[in-house]
Image 1 (cartoon, rainbow, N blue to C red):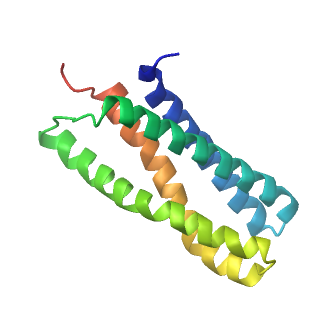
Image 2: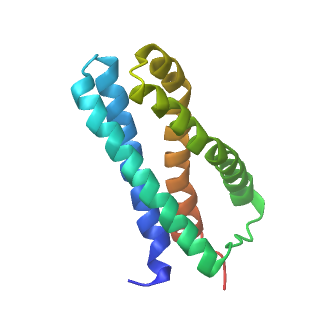
Length: 142
């Protein structure tokens, strides 16, 4: 494995995280918290692994400019901008949503989770889309 493998690994971790977030939401909507909890733990673990891989990659490689223009730019940049802006809010949101769990404040956890889940899911899914656009579908010319 090389540093150049990290974008694909990170996108995979984002994809798996999105699956666990969705499954956790599915189970808690049916009030089956025994299945919700392991899904959310797995989502936190995969998202944390993603964040570590993302930081390692960008410390070594830096940012990758897309160089997009035209229609692709009109699609890519709004996705990228919303992804980046919301990605900054996800970590604090997840933490403040998780704190009430340890306090057994289910009402507060539920209230915060209603905001955290869609943002976290959006960031995970758009992370995969950004990867696919930048590295697979429309890689910039070298």
